[in-house]
Image (cartoon, rainbow, N blue to C red; front, side, top):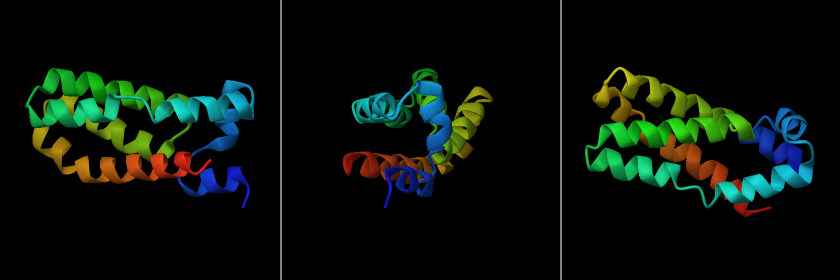
Length: 114
């Protein structure tokens, strides 16, 4: 299976991402860097600590990274959580954390295979 197909099947808009970043090599480099990004981990930690301003900052950062890299499924859930935290709807944001974890894990697993 082509790498493009693998990513498209996991909710990555690969074509747009390659066009935005300029080459497949750059996309791959940034995808690998995503595995080192601390935004998701920090978000989870701050939510557990009930430090909601820092949780908001972390999820907003994750949302931006997802937008730039074309991670559409992860972008959707991180955007929704961002808006919930912006409105201080903590309980609804917490309800979306399992979906966020699922989408984050799915992306990381795919990146680890390339």
